[in-house]
Image 1 (tube, rainbow, N blue to C red):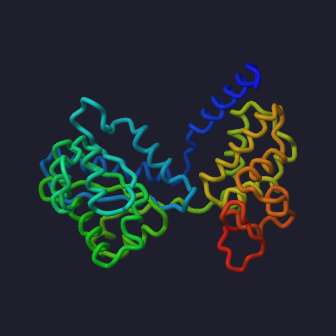
Image 2: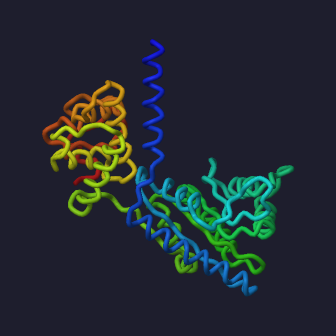
Image 3: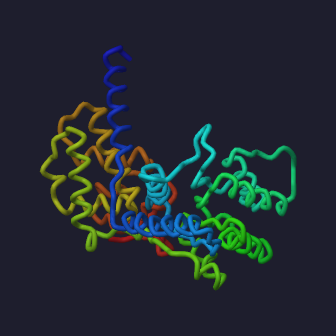
Length: 330
């Protein structure tokens, strides 16, 4: 690799990184912002009045690739008034963590303590750990705990473990000394946990990151694609401006918001690496081939009857016309 080629690759990598860091707002995110802001104002008002009424929670539900983790990160990182955990800062109004593996209450409690800056000095029982969690949440003036992939705490667990999870989460929200709100993000399996308990269901507001379809999101898809192409500096081949291509793009992204964006960026990256000044269908076909290892007949950018391709199947083993397939359809 010549120095010039390496420099070009480095420039492309930086350009793609900048594009990937761009956040695209949408209706579900705006709804999430609105609901969270209301919860935040309620908690702050209650604290000013010395009111210890129960806190509430939010569940952000979306399939894998829907962009729920990105939405949650954006919500907290760019909030104009939220105090995040920083070194030397006593107050941490929100603590964020991904549910660890194995997904046990003990591990989650220990992870929260670590996020609060109080790692366990020695092994302790789950009951003691969660007593400390509540104490340190109050000490740090924490108003919300965000658990990403929260469904892992509940799914595939026995009845007792499930009940313990639900009761522990409720105990945070109705703690008599310092109630703490929850932000739970996860797959649709998370709904099973919320619906399992009447009190938990009453306290949780649900925000869905629904599937993207051409019928209901045509304008959004066109705007999304045009925006990224404009930022890339590439010209747009006339073929890519046709609705037929964009329908293929939606399908290739599994009808999920986050995956569609990733597919757009992969196509752009492919065009930049081959030093093309025009973004073409072939760049997206090659990007999908690289991701899946599929033959042309199973590539949604090339196959004539692309709707029959299950793009959510295991990469490299895409199946055509499989009656057991649950792939999304346009």
